[in-house]
Length: 126
Image (cartoon, helix red, strand yellow):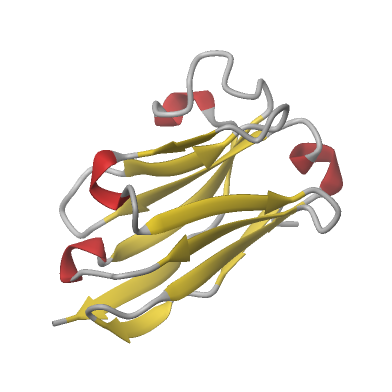
């Protein structure tokens, strides 16, 4: 049974918006910092955004600051990524991930995450 399930991807024109959701099991979500990564064809999987469990501190890669917002709902065990002003270079498969150590080693390195979703495709047309 999948423990992280993403949804909300799709095709959007440049300048448009999408909201990604990631539903997690309560066991994982209640103790984890949550992150979003993305992987474009032929490229490495890269960090996009993260939010800690303890104080809800947020982190963003520079290219999405001011356009993307990460949030979490600790009742619904869900993390969201609101993406505005989308650009063609945002096109990628987006993955949700969970770090049960709540970013003891920081949120950016994908090796700190123990759980991953299956990914959801985001395509931004020009």
